[in-house]
Image (cartoon, rainbow, N blue to C red; front, side, top):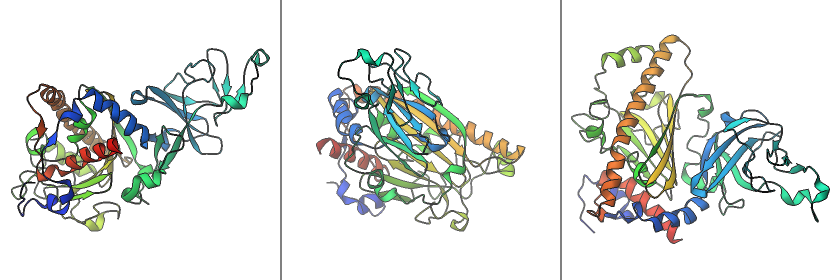
Length: 399
């Protein structure tokens, strides 16, 4: 155990996380990855979408989940409830829903015509009398547990999970109670298939240490200042399995000409809050001055950034020990004028370019970790959320 200084506030607040370097083996070991598949992802509630994607009865979307080697169909039933099923016909395994999303009154297998209603019940089998000792009720679609938190649809591959979604969300369950996430509009969606471990990918969104270096061209002074040159996080909140932080906004930031035009007509992704009075009670829970946005890390693979009039979701889907699919969605309050559309377009492009800069490092980092040159990573006080992240994964594997 190393000694700490008065400026290393987060280690002092969470001493149970220690200060030792973190081993890199979990990011390069195929065996460790397989244990994550079994003991992390198969036991977790995972965000697969939002309710706005399936607003009416019969609306559905398909989620390909390589980590489970399966496909899930999520559907709005006639009673308004949302259900999830393995997208697999119980006859001979054909995929039921071939399209990524759509609307259907029932699901009909294109192979032999077996038909299921929106509750997953098998309702029609052509030439049924040719089957032996056959009861349709024995062949309903295999369900997955499904629930909703603040409009986010979660599923658990275990139909009878040990914890409810509310129990899983724990300390974050009521954080956004009453916050109008359903009123925001999707303004950008990106995907990236990157040759890096899912935890390495998530690491870059859980610290701001990289901001003054990696993002110095795009946002040279938005989140740094003379008083905070390294973008220290003014608030970090460590929970049982999740974690959150608030990011600093430089009150003396000088906008570029393009930013100035965007600021003039509407809210942008760069604009922090001058004071806490104008914020919804869900935001900036520690009431820090010079607040930019909150970042919530929902174990295992969802990150939710929430700003004053916008939010971003990152879903990190493991494909292999060294390959990850990122699904990135950016939401803003609906534009009501052409000027606000300009502001949204500025924010969309800026967010895209910041994401590209993050992506530019990841495959190099993974190659470095796999090179054999390193055995461990020394983490600073400002990287304590990474330390907690690796601990929660390890604890889950050992459970």
